[in-house]
Image 1 (cartoon, rainbow, N blue to C red):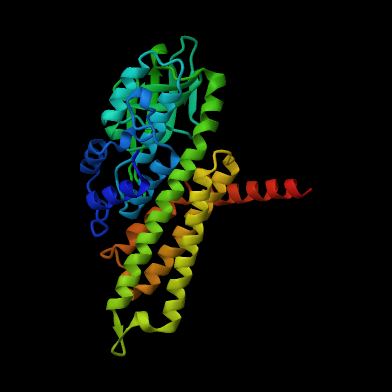
Image 2: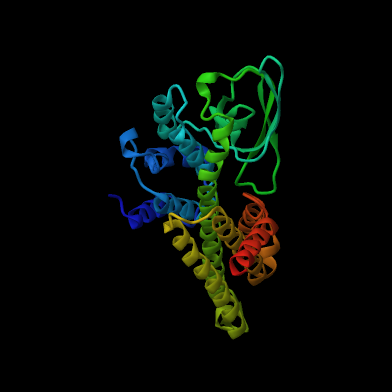
Length: 338
């Protein structure tokens, strides 16, 4: 049985903290070689059979270095294939995806229409790193299905985003004829699959946020030890010490909730969404403070502060906005008290 600290040590050796945003393709190959794509694959299917804690550990470490490798959508896509009871070549797809082929899960509503002959047209928007995907797990009118990116009637259009560590694409369908052999669910089963996989998406994103927040704070503290004012390191100034301590407190508190929720098999989607919101808001606050504590250099694009900030800003809007989850959490809390 692989221990979580072994995963942490391995990740930190392969992806050291001083090398932010390593090359995407090289990082993807390393992840596949180290078996990280097999972490959630059951042992009976040839995988490692590990649970949420293991995958969350990896996502935390990848957030720490602002990894460009799309491990979160890849993991979710693989879990969708694992859960499928209708995919014709399920074993073959599991082998391909765990060996390094990429098929991300897309969970946003898609604007798709089917004609009388069953051909589908429309746009599946916001697919991460679709340029390296062999297929996309998308919700079609008939249910979740694998959509090959090289199939007739399928095209990719890149959408530029502020965060340079990620790439987003629209999957444009124009008369695409779905292959029944690639169906993962029927229309009724799509909702159940979405509900089953949504908490994992929130946990993974929360881990990415807190790994990045911790790295941004570590970088800031090291700068404060080096930067001198009045012949003293600014880390010795009490007011700045208190600000750094406040950031550490926020991160540690959110991390405690993360691991509590990850280990709770009964955690609801609202609890997962609330956790993701807390982690993303902590990440945003930490990166904004990090820029200020770096002084003038923190405001420049030449410094790495902006890389963390841009990732934090995008994470805030993934898997639902803060307003959505704060309202839902509040309503459920009020209903429980009534």
